[in-house]
Length: 403
Length: 221
Ligand SMILES: Nc1ncnc2c1ncn2[C@@H]1O[C@H](COP(=O)(O)OP(=O)(O)OP(=O)(O)O)[C@@H](O)[C@H]1O
Ligand SMILES: [Mg+2]
Image (tube, rainbow over all chains, first blue to last red; front, side):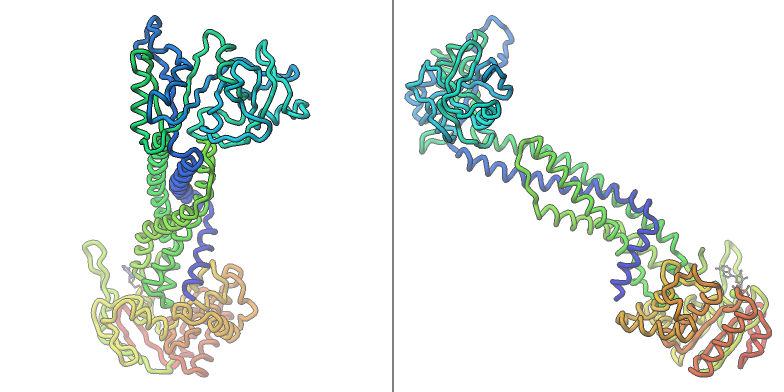
């Protein structure tokens, strides 16, 4: 009964000084919001890494040519020399840890269909092994095989296929795409897949040519083979395989610097990124919570001072110290919970935004919401205790005589 | 029911000690309607607050219903105020955010009574003081006399054995003041409640069963 009355009283008292209440809430909202965002981003990243493992498997290495020569001398071409296709093809033989390799060439130039530019589409030169290593599938037609070397065939990603249909292609297979002076005939469409850390290209927005075709057509300034996706043989650790790859490219015959990354590394990188968010949000969160808590304390102290007469009357009617303390404590907890509620909404919004910009899949974490409620409750009790105690210790007669 | 012996109260203001009560002896019997009169500043309210357990005397002995309450702790005093004493103040002292009935309910709520009961009982007392039709009104929507009636209902709701009224008609005109006094008389006569009224009005004092006159911190008659 006292609790129910106190709840009602607290709501009334807070409503009767709306402005002050709202100002006190801002800190709590930002604080709880940051905490919620922090926890929920953590959760999102955790799920994201799991998803990446599941998507691509843990036995995939990405080998990239090292750009930006440290010497800075343009004359020293040897280090940035192009990776030869023959060297890539020879990799599984030379490195026992390599089961399969899929080199990639990025073409330049704009593709067009029916005289209309395909703005999003980029050209990629690939080999037969590309599809399987990248865990992709064909939805229509067939993929390029090594029999298609030097051919004018191409396979398009699912988004490109949709674009073509929008531009009037009835049947995507058999349609022709122009790139520069060359015309390519579409022989297949890949099924839609997620873009992820291990696929360093836009799988759905690419036009795939055979690597040999792409190399021949690319201009002098092209970088040649820039990326190789490789599958590690069963029973070989990623580290061993990586060392073999590094040694292979460093050998005098090739003398190329490459960077090898494994799924573990990509996940580690993501987690590092997340740690930064966590640190930032944690700092903002704890500072705002303190500021917000002090705000709540201030509002409550003012409230106690303004209501001394009321406290005196209640004491005269038989309220014990504990009753008065409870009344003000409930008021500060309600105040903080209200801030917590808005903070939770704010935090969910913020983590949604972060997930959006980091290309992570957003998910709502129930634990974060529970934490938000718990923390705001704790802030209310912690910062409300002192004012509530002050109120309860007021001498009845002094309180009653004050105005 | 009330026995006060050599009650003293002094306040320290800076270096000087001000003696307000200088040894009050007073007996009030059960069922009596007593008035306390005296010039302004003689210590009537101070004495009333001590009797009402809102304030503690500097020295002296004080028995309420045969029990010495001089050394009771704060919670015990709150309990006694809640169950055995009803206050009526000159400025009514209703809580402005609460409706009339919610004000009347307060002593029962602090007692921990069920809501259904507190409502019913409060309504009963509002009826008794003739304010049933104003149960949902805020104090600001009531006249002074009406507010004092609500305050009396609040003082009575917990069925106390003692009502302490400090100049209950001080802020009211003669007619309304007379009605309030009539109410006190009825309560005293019909319910046998012990009532102590502080007043400046000799007319009011004359109606009371016994009159104590105070001067400069002591009872002189
Ligand atoms: N907290 C206090 N500190 C110092 N002096 C006080 C305090 N409270 C009361 N007094 C003094 O005690 C004296 C008695 O005050 P009290 O209120 O009891 O008078 P009263 O008889 O009720 O007067 P009135 O008829 O005007 O209400 C006054 O001189 C007042 O100044
Ligand atoms: Mg007085």
